[in-house]
Figure 1 (cartoon, rainbow, N blue to C red):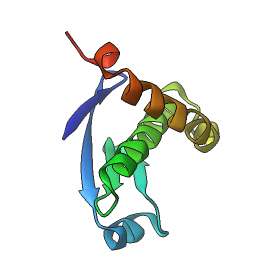
Figure 2: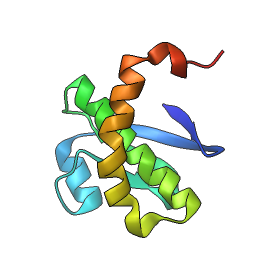
Figure 3: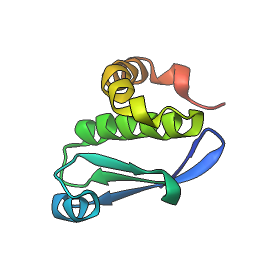
Figure 4: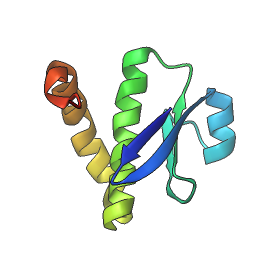
Length: 97
């Protein structure tokens, strides 16, 4: 899947937990790799957890774009669940026309 984040086209790829561990060096639900413009999501997660992980990783991509990578984990942990809930509860407000 391709998504636009801050004017850039990012690849979103699903990988198994063991594949992600090889990429990241630790167990994770997702990963944002800015220099590759790629977001990885753990393919073994339930669908709602994939969506939460994607939201979290997309926030990392935004933080990279605006130069806040040092604080991106704190920002993603703080905003990710709230944004996921907001978009899930009001999907019609977030659809493109």
